[in-house]
Length: 267
Image 1: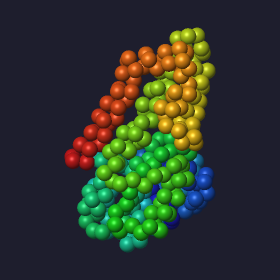
Image 2: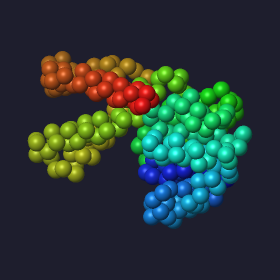
Image 3: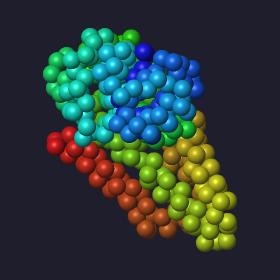
């Protein structure tokens, strides 16, 4: 098998669907396991992948092995599979707080490890993933894993010390954005718009605004100024947002998120 998943929850299924849709790996070359059998069977039926209850089978047969279980289960799973991990297997982690050094120590031997942090928009092929690797992984292997992850969104290489910031700015950030969309929709409903229409207007506006940042290359402040006409409605709204601590609230939330991630690494 080219690609194996130990753990087949929402994130893993989003990743699998993305790489299949992008034709990076065929469903026949993907194998997955999960403790929750109904969830695993559903994934096998809907995605057409091979499923198994045997984590060792996945670990011994996969060229790229993705550990998509919750961080609390990492040590247990690693102890189970460490004896069958081959020298050429690349292990990919997606757990916040699990450093390269910590994962390698859990294996008890030199293993090719790539640490990643994807986010839930991978479910619609618009994910943002950060990745870094230990010194056992070759440039060719890094390229192959990056290509695989690009099946469900954008991928950027980062230094490992940046991973806590990544958790705050992309890993956890969809939750903040969903709150923004919900608040925008509530504001539109307050002014008489139907709930369905309000949600569509809010979500499309957020999506389009993000696309403008990525595709124009302009600073977000420049794009904001383009919308703020002198004495107009937008600058009035911006004034009120600043008075309510809009930007500082987001920054403080991100700082708390990053601190939590750092503390998880120490536990």
